[in-house]
Image (cartoon, rainbow, N blue to C red; front, side, top):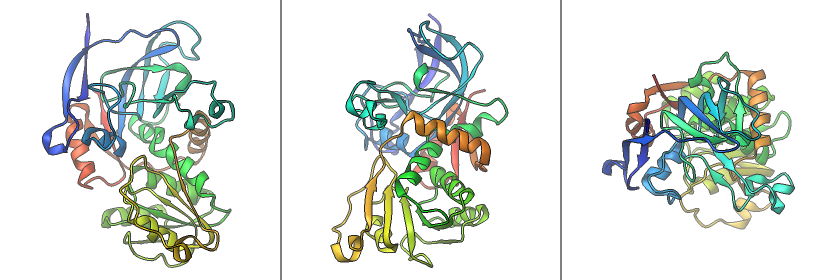
Amino acid sequence: MPETTAWVVERPGPLTSAPLRRVERQVPEPGPGELLIEVAACGVCRTDLHLAEGDLVPRTPRCTPGHEVVGRVLRTGGGPADFTAGDRVGVAWLASTCGSCEYCRTGRENLCPASRYTGWDRHGGYAGLLLADARFSYHLPEGPPAEELAPLLCAGIIGYRALQRAELPPGGRLGIYGFGASAHLTAQLALARGATVHVLTRSEQARQLALDLGAASAHGAYDAPPEPLDAAILFAPVGDLVPVALRALDRGGTLAVAGIHLTDIPALNYQEHLFQERTLRSVTANSRADGRAYLAEATHTRPAVHVRRYAMEHADTALADLAADRITGAAVLLNG
């Protein structure tokens, strides 16, 4: 049987314990409704880091991470599929849902109890080849380089949903806490919609990138923004920042927490943090409608995607650089 190379999480733990291992696997065969995809690029997401280090309990033994995949369809497995061999395709975090529960029936498939995820339940894109459900895959345009499209498939989509959850009013004042891959795309989306954006993050390089992209200000993560915020999004996985961001909200403002993992939130003081109808809400995955809407908007606004490129064989280095905050913008693994 022909084989393909893939990274797997051998034993979750600190990156110093080398949890990732590069292995050879048999080439998977697509079943009905599935696509066999040749991977051109895969974005490196903080969720991959959480999986490798064990913050997310692996759901598949020796799982291959990666859920920001750009590639081409090699072949389909028959059955209904809106793709043919040669099509450019994107694969994102949400891999499948049941399609019949209350949440799926009411447009909230991101909350489906039976939802499965690329690079957590199903093998992901840190590989040469990937199997994906055609119904949860995206047609991608031919023009942009694969490394610029890959971050849109999670960093962009989850940022889009977080911005929707934050309920930023037209022309409003948005605070962004943390400024990595998702935040730098979300800031551009908000700016294109006419918002004033204030960035609060510990990295000096990230603060400079925020200003270069058009943010009105950029300060340290625990600093107060220069004006009250109508809405805020917390991208940094740091629970200590929740009361900081709530305190920065104006009356009626909303804080959306965008990460899948967050350290413990300190005790909140009702009068200081929540009174005057301030709202704290989480963001859970995304729906396919979110993905289609964001990719359509990104095609129109053409965000500047700041990419640090790595060869696929250096995925462990990319994750180590992400963990150490040595990446400004997005990291992307490339095949070939």
